[in-house]
Length: 212
Image (cartoon, rainbow, N blue to C red; front, side, top):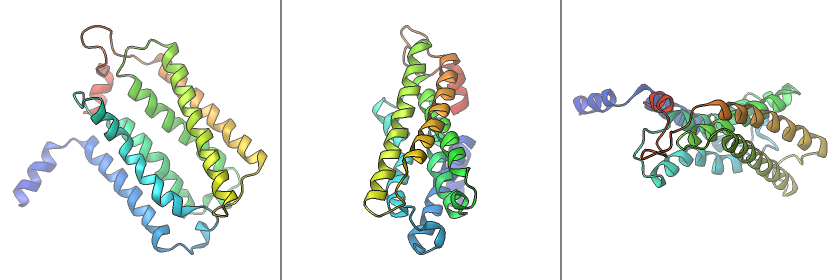
């Protein structure tokens, strides 16, 4: 058995094991509010919804990859970026950073919007889309996610599961999300994409190398 396990480990890339570590860390962190719901830092944070929804972030890229035919190198980096966003959210809630540092929430919205939008940009590199289309898609999809997050926060607050978002706080969150999405969109517009032709739709060489 030990020889078999050693062979399995040897055949997997460092990117694969890094991704396993990220997803394992997310699950481990979510076990804290699941087993200690009365901790002060988890009050009015709708942690029960985070426990249910956040693990789904680890399934988005695997499902899309399967739907796309999984004939291309697995996009480990895009998968890791999507997992990193909920991971950091739970981490900072656990350390009570949002309540202790007034600007921390804005910083996290900015950083997480970059992570999510750039994960979208990495996926789009599989296709020959030019520059304008990736920019608009990344910006639009990044902001769509940000609006959805704010609606979810408002709904949780209105239902009594979390603090109700104020108008100013929501606008601030969306403003930082716009900055982050725009930054990722600008990167997407300048990164190489797949060439048109018989192999159109395959990942760009740089991405394939990064995902090995």
